[in-house]
Length: 159
Image (cartoon, rainbow, N blue to C red; front, top):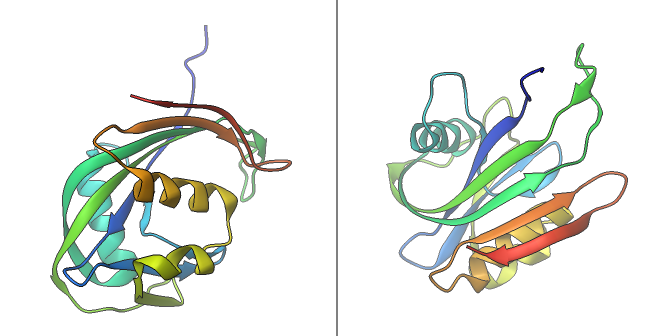
């Protein structure tokens, strides 16, 4: 039996003391910071690293708000034959320092009023995951969705 391959990723909804949310702009538009967990790296360290790399902001990770499976498989690029299932975990985070900046992956980073965030995020999966943050009530959410050919939620439940 072949061992399954998954991409593991983390996302951070970083909220400052004024109730603003940290967003970064990448090739897909506005998103909250995050990315893939590297080999040998734990989830928290990956989120701290990704947030610093993408935005210049230092964070502490507070609590889990959602676990997501993107079960779409589709042709990759740069020699990747097929992009495998992605497992993502989103956390609420608090800033502890740093200065807003951009990176090789981002073209902008900003603090945005919480009630304006959904006006900027265009990717359906990211909008859905941010809405889970807005709806959070002490229970994390689990969702399975696909993003290709079109975004579709296959399963949603609280855990």
